[in-house]
Structures are given as structure tokens and as C-alpha cells.
Length: 126
Image 1 (cartoon, rainbow, N blue to C red):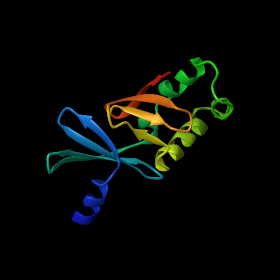
Image 2: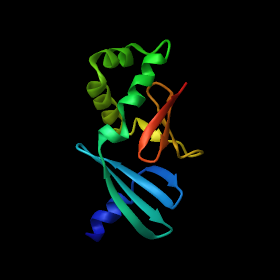
Image 3: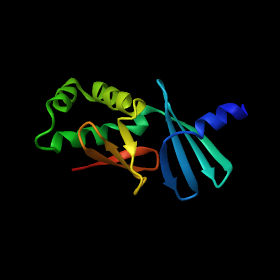
């Protein structure tokens, strides 16, 4: 058990929270958030991709002009397929947290920034 928890603590996706630091791990079926305060594990939560990447976030892309063709194609296929593309990018470390401001994620393939609050993406910053 201790070894499994230590592996979860080794994530590169780090988000500062009010009560500690959350390290996010992106698995095939879910996301695991492990919250650490100094050296103590405070909480371990499982987050669904539907909660992490809500439809309201996906629909924001429809309001952006001059999207890359690949993103437009995934939008036309619907939120389920678009969420799958974002999930794959998160798992492959193509969407990463910024060092300067940990509540921001950057989708490096398209140089797009996403704001993260609580347990989900909330806004696309263009």
C-alpha cells in the first residue's frame, strides 16, 4: 500500500490547493488526486474524466476563432470524442501544469491554456 501511495505522489501534474498540494495521475478510467500537506497525505480522491473535463468547458472551444483543424474536427464529433482527445493528451503529458501558476495547464500541441479550479477545467484562455 505504501509503495502505491508513493507512486501516486510522484506525479508531474501538481496543483496548489488551499490545504496542500494535489498531485494528479491520469489513468485510463479515472484520475487520482492525492493531496499532500508538507509530508502528510491528507486525502486521495478519484475523479472521473466527465467531472475533470465537463461539457461546459468543451463548449467554450466553439467560441474560439481560428481553431486548428484537428480541434475543429474533434468538436464536430461531439463532447465524448473531444474529451477522449483531451484525456489522451493528459496521459501523454501533452497537457501539463505550468511552473509559475499551478492552476493553469498548457496544451503544448496547440499552445492553449486551461484554467483549473477544484476538480475540473473551468476556462479556456486564449
